[in-house]
Length: 416
Image (cartoon, rainbow, N blue to C red; front, side, top):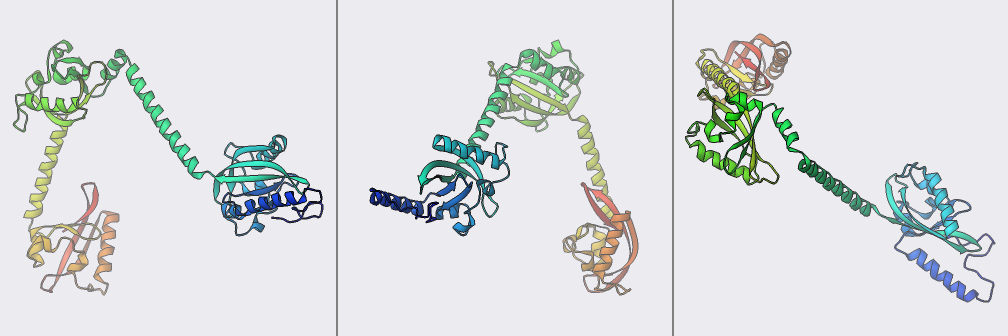
């Protein structure tokens, strides 16, 4: 602490009859000031600067000594604006005036340490007479953890409130609003009683999908629009009961199902079941999407892949599928050509691994392979002569045609 008062005497000197008592009190204050685990700062409201501080305050503000903090103003140790948007200099002046007027004031403050980090503080400032003048004893406490806890509580409360709002909106939605949503849904939707199975609501898309009138649909159950057995061989009634039970228990099953059109035509679909909340606890909504076209596309894709595989394997020309790093697939012809025992011996290798170190033009095989691959990826194809090396170490001159292809969403290279 500073030892000189404005009168020239040491701050703990007294000339009246109670000097001994006051000196002892001042000594106790000094002892408490220096040894307190709490940060304590003496602030001079007239000069507007920090007059003294203890070691705990030095540590709190990440300073290396008291001297770094003394003669600074509160605004010097704060960001330009406080969290409420007010300038720190303005708020400091207002708080100083309140302490002068009321004798003490408790407030929150965002401070900026000397290393630039910010820390939220709770501060108790008390005006006391010392050495013939009034100083403010400022006790700041780090409330970082409290602020984190408050923020988490606010977040949880906001989440809870949001859930309450969402649930309230759901419960207050009228049957007319629900019917509107069902009617204008892009997929076929039916609502049925999970206990009896009877349809209670169907939208226009369901009417069109099953080729029946709305009145007819409302007399039916899921079993009435399904074949006796599903493709797995299990009875539709038995399997439907399991799926409905899963939805009633709170699950949201999604599964493929074979349905029957009014004409007798069977068609594949995807079904999503969800248990509807409300007074009637047994209602289930089923969203149904016709997968006829998707199944046709999948079948065509499988046929295309099978044809490709057959041509790939049956070709008498060596064919490799690779990316920029390694062989991914090779056919039997290239396995024989390079003298390996199986495709597994080649898959995973780089083109330069099945070549001599250098090509006839003197360029390294690794560099040359990378150049041809880059050309193919950029232009779509590349054609060149190449010197390969078989499993026995013999060099084979070959002509190579690289073609960029799209396979499974990836840009790959077919080497012939």
